[in-house]
Image (cartoon, rainbow, N blue to C red; front, top):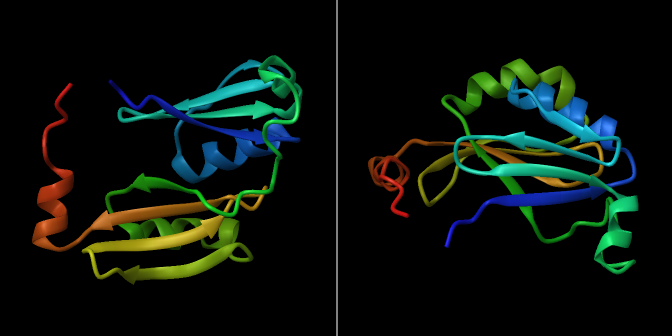
Amino acid sequence: MNFVSVRIITSDVQRLVRFYGEITGMPVTIYTEDFAELATPACTLAIGSTRTLQLFGGDVARPADNHTAIIEFRVGDVDAEFARLSDTIKDATVQRPTTMPWGNRSLLFRDPDGNLVNFFTPVTAEAIKKFDKEVVA
């Protein structure tokens, strides 16, 4: 089994496409006005409009109402990313770069819909070892 993607449902696909393209520096592929994807080597972040919910049977998700999930991106230097994004996320920063007890240095902020986003860099030997393991299919 392979974990492939996480999908965010939003009422404004273009706004999230711009935001995730800017914070990651990666291209976001827009397939239709209702669906786009940010593909990374490890996983894909899908962005779907509320109109796509009809394909799943109706009111199965609510945009801008996440209170449980955090979308996480491993970055090379979380402090450098914070400096680069300071203007973009200044009003949305939840936690400035902080070294967590499990060995990651993390920056927590919210996207325009209020979803939590974590940029992290493993900084302890144990955390670095954990994330540098080869992926086994």
